[in-house]
Length: 203
Image (cartoon, rainbow, N blue to C red; front, side, top):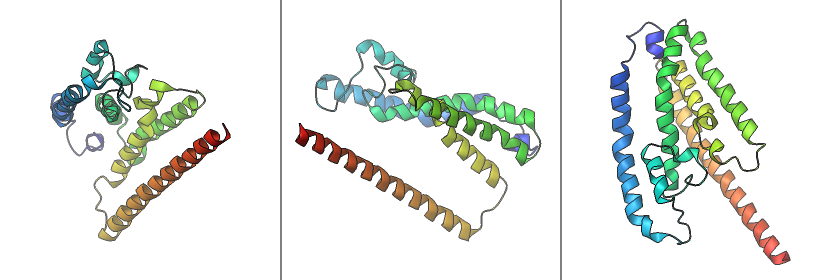
């Protein structure tokens, strides 16, 4: 869509886009969903296993489980991320149409991801004041800053060749960021465990 907005190609066809996105996600998702039901449905009450009700299973079929409190993070919890991914795929053509309507150069095209980042930050700041945000933390607006940063990065490198040295630096920086994030969360978990032990000891 950015290339089309910059006059470098024709606008992407919606039908082809949806077919490619569907082929990327749907077969593996439904295979994982069926496997999760087959493996876990009889394990109700097992520690660590949270199951939706039978009446909530259709929500999983249409990627809607994130929008309701009870089925959220049940059955196969990591599937919540695919709900976000699919919702982004569905919204992206509208964002692409907006990019084409804006036209102009890179600075004008950057308006779309910048606005999305600002809205996502506002959303997360708002839900941080809610004791238990539930589904509000597992929907597309909460993840918009991540998607929008990727869109902004794609815009900045579009049509440009990144020198090999910079590629190595960016790869190392990304790996370091992942490692630091893992250490930070491991430290959080350790502190939480120590606090729990202290409460148990006091009790």
